[in-house]
Length: 274
Ligand code: SF4
Image (cartoon, rainbow, N blue to C red; front, side, top):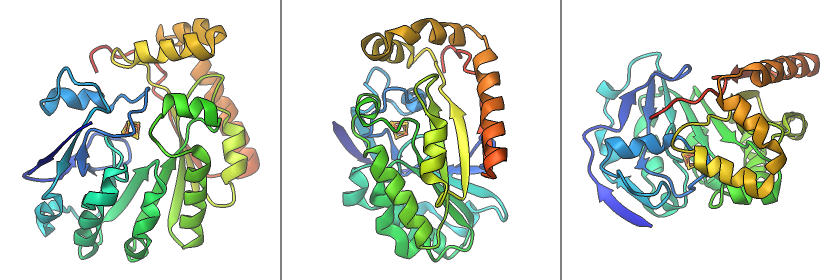
């Protein structure tokens, strides 16, 4: 793991994501090295071409200092952690995310944080001081063994859900991000039932098979779920029927169970070169 400290001009940048106007990524790269991660397109923009995703992290060492009143547009939403995990293990040492939160406190922006790590609980003292903040925890696979293979360095799904529960108990608004949904592997009903007492909303995102993660995903399937290969091949050939049916199933289940939800499906078509 190559770790470099880098200075940046700004840490808040404009976003094209559906529910965030701006994003804040305290690190470039991610120690969690999830096999399905598609954020590795960042390598092209950050001088890491040719390096393995998960083998490097640039620490934006001066990130908190770059946050000023000019960085915040009134009423806009800032998402912390769109292409990195803001609470990956390095954060315990560097506290860049914590420093950014300390700085953001005085501006009280609309804030969302997305992570796979219980380390977020360290910052409960700060999180509780924001008037408009919610924290999302992502869990796509609850099965411990499969999660170890897909997300080798992230904390266990069980510990993530425990963290979500604790956030809720402490009065922080929460959401569960069921992402990525692996066809015929992710059991969304199980996750909904486990989290229904402490997830204020549930967001769903499908698995995105792209040129850069396709080999890793199919290698995983060959080793663990070979019987699913034909389905995944069908999905990556722009056949949206699986996602359409799943969307109907999720909507029906959530409505019946009165669970607030949003579905972000891009229909799993392969997007080359992204
Ligand atoms: S935690 Fe998120 S950003 Fe980090 S490797 Fe996993 S999917 Fe990618």
